Amino acid sequence: MNEKGKYNMKAFSKMVGIQPGTIRAWERRYSFLKPQRNSLGHRLYSDLDVEQMKWIQNQLDVGITIGQAIELLGNEHQTSLYNPKIADEFSSVQTMLHETMNELMRFRIHTAERIFQPFLHHFIDDDFRWTYFSKLEELINLKLMGENSHKVQKEFVLSFFSRKIHQVSNLFLIQTPFPKVLVICNEEYIDELHLSAIFLHLRKHQFEVVVVEAGYSVRDVELLIKETEASVLIMSLGSQIINKKSLTLVRQLQVLSGITIAVVTSNIRLSKQPEGLLKNVQLIRHNKRDTENWMKALILNK
Image 1 (cartoon, rainbow, N blue to C red):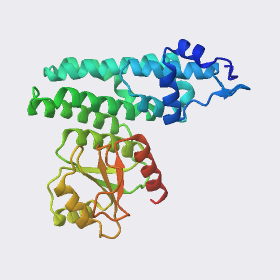
Image 2: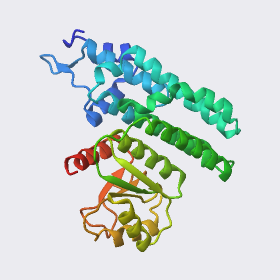
Image 3: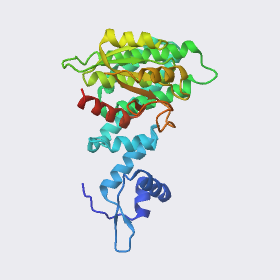
Image 4: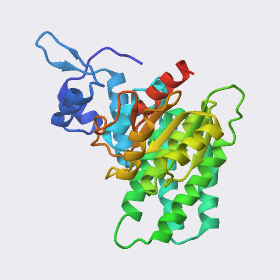
């Protein structure tokens, strides 16, 4: 692939089908394109730039946000991600999620199983897992959080996907003596999905995970930590609104010695520690970067 800059903005815009103003805005915000400049300072784009931008546009066409597409493009396997074959495969997965969700909303479990099962292996793949979960979260927000949906539908859909995630996690045999992780779920549907993503990530990296529901007292959690011999505690704080009971529980538990505590949230607006939490409590938002950075630190300190 020739990486020499040779297309000006007008030609590049026409080739990729995106307006010049949008291209400039994405360059400033995401820094994923770094065009060369001619003697007059005008941008010159390469064939590689064209290929990358066309791949980005394909992802937008199947419902992925620009931020998610940039994150995929920027990972260590980027040379394969904008391969047309991979793009087509990813598009198929988006369609599968829509079709599976539609069948589950009608409680057609056998049809949903038939549609979803051939794609189950995708959740093992590090490159795509977080985008899949983001898309799934988007669909749940769209289809299950409206006034026309019922609690039983929400529970049915989340139960299906949680069960599938656990099927994948059981493929990872625990072979190394990594610390045990105690995960305390919240009752929120989106947060449960978020924790499922982290659970799968932990299992793939050889952590033994014990998952329990929310609603325990401080004394109960201390007993759970002792009985499970957990050295890591992960708690959900909620998605749109921080759960006050969970936050209070974390504040009480953060003084315990010998336990690493992380709090997770799908609330993208939460950019800093909630009030009252110590610096040693790690905040993990629902994205690949936060989770993988925390995971690396956890492995180094095991």
